[in-house]
Length: 606
Image 1 (tube, rainbow, N blue to C red):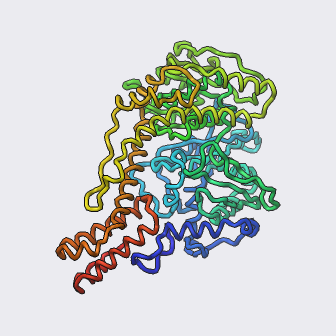
Image 2 (cartoon, rainbow, N blue to C red):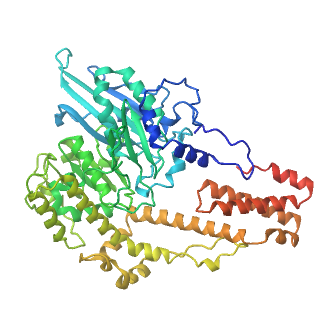
Image 3 (cartoon, rainbow, N blue to C red):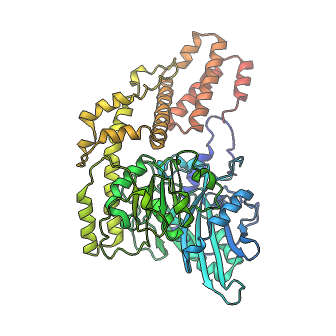
């Protein structure tokens, strides 16, 4: 990110994170939203726009690039436009984008269709320094953090009859490529710009990208006003400090606000689960355990929404395995994911091509859905079907698996949702009920694990400023299992069943591995922060008077290293602790001979 550098590199200089955060706060005022709605003149490529950003840095915080994919009679799908023009995509990435941006021919998507895909970033690609998004990543909930190995593609596809074209149809997709998993937000952006783009073409797209380049940074917890082509959107990105299941954005009547988004990432959960909602709890188990899952759907819109709903159902836990909202036979990972020489990987695939009914019939869990029509009638209670009955993509909707759930089905939630259908309760309200149910189920499951992992933390009194921070105790599965008798999920959940069996299975899953690594990292950072606080409380100057110059220099270098680590890893250290430690370092250096002072002062603090 080309932020303006600090004026000095001394201990008290303000870092780029603070500058970026301050700049974001200055830009969030509602009064500025009105001014932002007015079209601004384009900037030169290297022009600084007064926010400490170079041209396209604002754009890069939200998007990697925008692509237009068309159909060529000789070449097939082809990327016609990449904007901004300096955006870099490898040939492999372009190929993936081409095939993933069009529905399979059997989908028969006439008119406008929106969907989402996710693809692996090519290996060897350098991490972009343009995007200072990483500096705000630490404040996001874990399930919204960027995955550096993947891009998302948000698609607005149009297919309409056009007799002037040889093929007889106009077929084109406008695609937003981003690292951010803000599905609802980017679909809303496309709804605003894609229809007009198809009418007005390239100049319109350039103007829209210029608007995005002027947006404030995607800072979690801030109310953001985002103008695009005469429309102002009001959004708030969640933070890791928000209470799960709550919406923080205030719905206030505002004349200059055209669109208020209550969520940036959530899909219509009930609409997606409706065809199989009798099996919602079983699907929650399969996702929690990281089991291989295939969603077979009639269109990419339905497949992508359903896959995203499945990933979302274990929130606030993050789904740590791979998932592909829309997957095609042309995907670069097709062979890897469809091979029969090894067990199916821990991944959720959304597919529409009938070919997959045969290719993936060895997968253990398959969800077959029909059209996601508005929920007007209660679906019949369908039994879980045997996999051998799934012959083609035309098979009846349902869940095909031999999996036996660990938990007894909660009949209460089924009755509540059925009653909502009978009373014609809006899908949004049904989604709120279902999301709260999944949230409570996930929290009941994870709280005993959180409680046990917290007990692995060493006591604060064991932290000595003169020794390395103590290590966390080892996670012992059997020791954890013994805690469940008194402090298990039965304290918060009415659901009965084999919870112990579910935990044993979970402890072997990629989701546990990812969750525990994240918690262990957080706790290790907390220990480092407590160690810094312990150092601050010591009279370090007095210590140096009792030790040699060599030991004193060694202490200064170690303290500087600690400060660098705290800044680099965003350790949870109070700013006053950092300032106090810098003061200690300065005082120690000034007490040394002048030749050593000059050497140590030249050592960079950044």
